Image 1 (cartoon, rainbow, N blue to C red):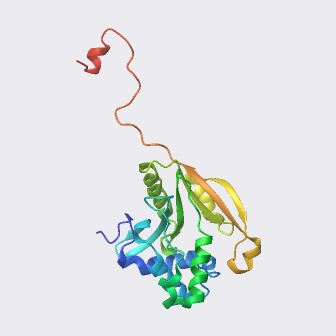
Image 2: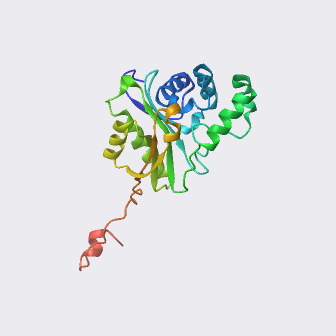
Image 3: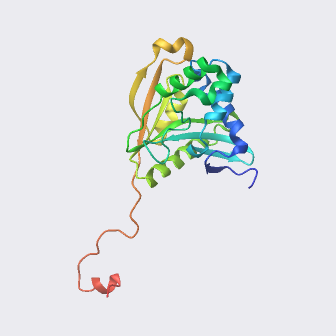
Length: 227
C-alpha cells in the first residue's frame, strides 16, 4: 500500500484499533463520561466493545485518518459499532460489577434504533491532522454506496449542537435536519444541549441497459439490432 495514498476500507483492521479508540475518544469522550467516567477505563471498555465488521475507515499506510460506525435494523450491521448485550459480565474485570452494569445499561438505553429503510451512521470522526482533506466526505460517500447496495433509502446521522461545522458539511453533502432532541438537563455533564438528527436520501442504483424506448419508425428494428 502506498504510504501516502488515502484508502477507504470496510472493517476496522486490528493494527488500527488503538488509533480508532483514541480518535473516537477525542470526538465523543464527553458523551461517554456519564456511563464510564474514568478515561483509562473508558478507553479499555471501548477497545473491547467495538465491532470491527461494523466500521468504515480511511487510512494512509499505518495511520488512521477517519472512521465511521454503521448500524442497521438486522443485517448487515445490526447493533452498531458498539454491540452490547444486556449482560455486563464481559466488562466486570474492567469496571467492576456496578460500573459494568451502569455502562452497559446506559449505552443500551441510549442506542438509536435504525429504521428498516436506513443505515445509521453510528459515529463519524476525522483525525485532527487529516481535517480539511475531504476525509469525512469520502467516508459518507462510501456509506451512501453501501446503503444503495443494500437497498436502503436513507442515510441518517446525529450531530450535537456544539458542532456547527459538521452540520454545515452534512448539509452541503445533501443531508437535511429531521428533528432536534433537547438535552439541556444533561448539558452540565455532556457539554452539549441538543442532538440534531439529519438524513440524506439515497438514489437507487440505475438499472443497466434500461433507457428510453426508441422512436417508432420503419427502420427501428434494424437500428436496435433486434432479430
